[in-house]
Image (cartoon, rainbow, N blue to C red; front, side, top):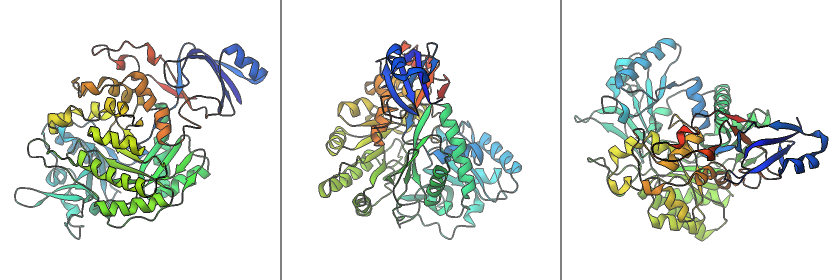
Length: 519
C-alpha cells in the first residue's frame, strides 16, 4: 500500500506525551501528522485507513550499540549459556552441545556470569576439560571481555605471553588456569576458523528478525571486522536489510598491536559506515573496566587496553579522513584517557563530528562537563542495571555503586544521551525493558542502584528514539515521526504513558513483554 493513515490510537510522533489524532504515511515516509479529517483531505482517495483500536504508536526504537551478528550467532551457531546457574549446568549443556555437533572442530559458547553461578567462582580449564575433553573449547563470559578455554587449547598456543592490554590468569601455583581477559582473547580467536560469508549472512538475517520483534528499526553494530563489513554491504546491495544499520569498523583487533586500514565510508538508506570503534578498557561486571579506586576484596583496578599515544595517533588519522570516533570506556580511568584524546582532536581539528563514548559507566562531574564542551555523546545501557546489577553490588565500592551509569547527571550536564542494550552481553534487548531500568534502576532482586540517578519515562523513551538518531547523525530523517522522515514506527498493544509508576507497581507491569510490531 502506497499510502496509509493511522488513527484512533495513542499516536506519539516524538515519543513524548504529545499526541496527535492521525499520521499519514506515503511511500515509506511520513507525509503529515494532525487531525484525521485534515489528513484525509490532503491524501485524497488514495490512502487506506488503519484503525489502531486504541493501541500506542511510536517512532521505531533504535539500538545504537548492539552486536547484531553476535546476537544472530547465538540464534544459529554458538551455544547460548546465558541464564545458567551453576558450573555443573554449564558442563551438562556443553557436553550435550558437543555430542550434537561431532563435526565441529571447536566447541564455542557464550553467556555465563560467575555472580549467578551456585559455585560463586569463575569456571576454569579443568571444568571445561570435564565437559569437552576431545576438542578445543572456548567459552566467553557474558561481557565478552573474559573467556575460558580447556586444556586442549593450550596445546595450540605458541605462547602464553599476554599482549598489552590483556591478561593470562594463573592459579596459586603459577599455572595458567584457562582464563583470558581483554586483548589476550586475541591469542585464542586467531586460532578459531573464521566464519564464511554465508554464515554471517544467516546470523544477520536471524538477528534482524529478532530485533524487529522487539520494535527495533535501527541498530548500530560496533566493532566489525572487514569480512563482516563486506557482508553487510553485499546484503544492502541485495536489498536484504530490513532494519537501518550502522556498522562500525574496529580499528585495533583483540591481541593485535597493528591497526586495520581505514575502510571506505558508505551510505545508503539502510546501511551507514562512517564511525570507527576503539576499546579503552574492559567490562564492569567482570572487573576489567579501568578504575581509579580498586574493586572490592583486592579485585585490582581493571585493564587499560590502549596506550594513549597509540590511541591518539590512530584517532587523529581517522578524524582527518572524516571518520567519527566511538570508544568503549566504562571506568573513570578509561574515561580520563578518552576525553584527553578527544580534547586533543578538538584542539587540532575541530569538526563537530559527534564523537561518542560507549557505556560511560562511572564518569565524574568534570567528565560530564568536558563532554558537553566537546560535544561528545554518551551511548549507554540501562539494562545493565537490571541484568548485571548483582555484579556491581558484589564488586563496586559504594563510591562507585551510588553513581554507576548516572543518567540523571548526564542529562543535567547537557550531554547527548542515547540508550542501547549491548546484546548479547545481556539476554533481554527489549527497549521497553531498558526504559524500565532507566526509570526504576532496580537489579534482578529488586534493589535500587543509584536512586538519585533515575530519569523520567519521556527521557528514557527519547534515549531509544530521537536521542539515538542524534548520536547516529540521522535525526534529519529518523528518530521521530515528522513530515519528510522515514516512517519507521512501532505499535504497542498498550499505551506507555498509561502506566502508574511506583516501586511496587512498576513500569514492567504496563509495557514489558508487550508485543511490538514494525509496520
